Length: 102
Image: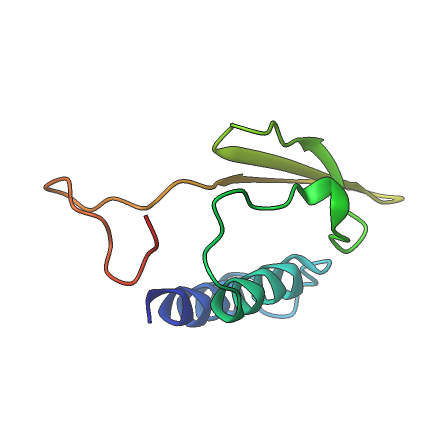
């Protein structure tokens, strides 16, 4: 399934790029979200991130009909922003990626 490949690829990339560095829970949050999406039936109106715990991340922007979300986490020495596009992925030629819900 596409999401499992995405999870594996994201994990491998993060391990290579940040070997030895802390990811402050971002990878765990991504894995949890992917696992939830894989185990949940498709919904016409997904719940807002305001109703879910996102590992100490605050929701900056999550409009009801928007296709993106912005999360922020502030620590003592750093501030982390995560921006995600929540639209179906498209491949060259205009088709949807295999395994995605559209």
